[in-house]
Image 1 (cartoon, rainbow, N blue to C red):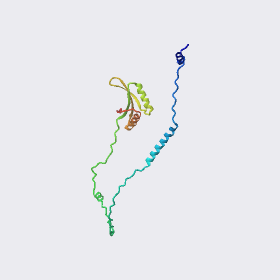
Image 2: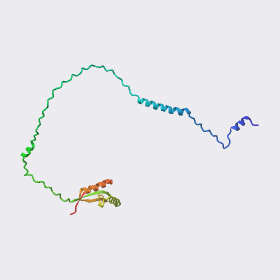
Image 3: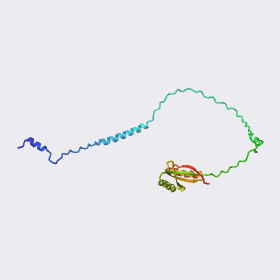
Length: 201
């Protein structure tokens, strides 16, 4: 025979493989009257603000004692006399002074412009200098593609007996031509260095 305690304990044991599931929490339902109350409060608040905006500020009027002002006496009309305008003659004396004065220019030589001598140098621009000749070739190709065809590469030996490959532009006979090339280099984010080279006789 089974005792009641064993029966109760037997019924309370979960079966193998079964898990206890907790029921999902029930969603709280919002009362229907809240859906009407909240918009009604908002509408009443906005209406109240609009009414407050239309109220004009009250002006306080202070009573002012009236003082009696004596009337001004009427001016007696004066007899109008015609005004005589006497025309003034403008007298300019410098016309007479200029006619009477004479300037002696015999000791002044006539101005003669001196012809500008032929300059004995050219303008040059150095765009960059590199240790590697391939870098110099790349820079020169970039300059040629941008329209600066007068670019060349010159090899020089530095103080440390190492070669430098300089990308130079020129020669330019006038400063204006050099300035145009310099502006183009600056637009390409290249800061050039300008110098002069003597013409070979």
